[in-house]
Length: 124
Image (cartoon, rainbow, N blue to C red; front, side):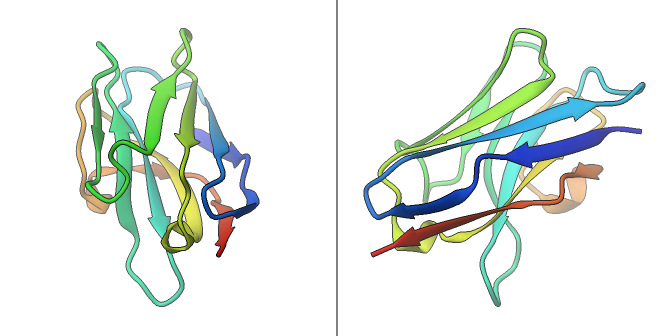
């Protein structure tokens, strides 16, 4: 089993920055690609960014490319999402996720473990 705990959400003005963290633990954790998804009120949960296990390759949704950066620490147990130039449309609950495989995927159904979510609110 894998446990994921997010932190770092909050309220920020448009144009501001936030950094989300996701700490992973569990006996079976290792070799997992990880990703961030988000869900705005009344909308489907959507892919934001992902990082692979091995080389740390990354992939981003077009809507955040150039503004958000996903990374993981050397121990590969913590994943970060640096969010810059935030817009009101970035307002959502952000979820950390992990899959039982090293490669990047962008579909929600490809991820096996989820955190509880952290609220990000961007005011105009």
